[in-house]
Length: 488
Image (cartoon, rainbow, N blue to C red; front, top):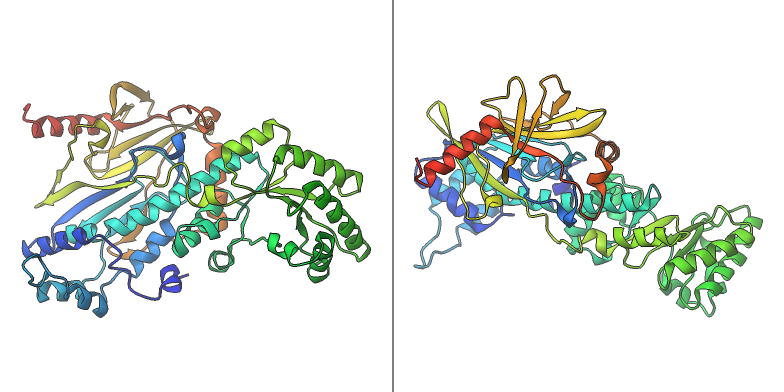
């Protein structure tokens, strides 16, 4: 499925920051179009003060890169840009270079649905410096947002303890693309269905929905509204009961539910969208059960998130399906993941010259190298992750060192089971990866979460999962920092 072509029908090469193109122009002017480099895309902190993140957005990245090109319209637009002297910002020769440029990078990435942690490269780019620079912004745009929403969805699903979560956020999402991408990411994170019909069509996500308050208010009485809906769609009846008086609304839904039974159909349930959801769901459950509707679900909505779901569970709320919108698709308590894209090495002749970005803040000092992530397992649980340089792979006992605290170290025996997470996606610009179905990705995310200790999954002060630099990489990074700071 050509996602970007379906959604936009145009080149997306200009979906970038201007400075990416001005740097590309500088490389071209300096004769560096063939210079090779490695870039690593990663984030620095788990979102929502949590203990894990769900990787998401790779299919969008694949589609973007597979269709990456500068069209005639793109270069015509760039030709109109002016510098501060009123002259053209870019030479005609550079614009012609962009138009003729063919995507030829090597791309490795961690598959969607995988649990990931701070500092770990989620995507690694190797190839021409100029192309690696040009794709930075769109890759961050895609991976940052979808990983954020998939993680939020996973947290909500943990709070719901296996009960269905429906994503209802399109009307509150950040624009059209925000709504489409959020529905996809929320499903990967564990949501069971979406109200977003276009997302259902594009991505094969189950869609759900019945009626809103406006339906009830369009009729003279609530009973008349429920009856009319049941007559129109007897196989899709979840009645929204809080337009006027919730308890009375439940009673009217039961009355229509009995009529449905007589017609050979079944009332699926009711929805609560306001008020004291714990109290009202308990009252509704009692009424439904007494009337013989033990199988009818109680759906709750109304600005829910994982913390409210937890609270309602503690109050013994009788809610079995959770409809979540705004606080899911916007990320709400953290609107951005904060992923970054840093150069790790530049090729000089036949050798790689490793690079590190310094900062007064230790967390902002980048990791040099052509990086890979190795995940170790013990008793089917994730034990620790090691970030290492592929040019200098580990051998023997594996020692990992926390890049922010050198006293936090862990030795891992060479016999411990492991797997390397980054997988080849593009080779010399050719796609070599077969994307799994969205349903497989969602299932993978659920299985991945099961490999984490419960202490990592808790919402308040989660345990910090061990992630460290392989000792040789840590030592090399330290030497580079000392050299740059003139201590050596």
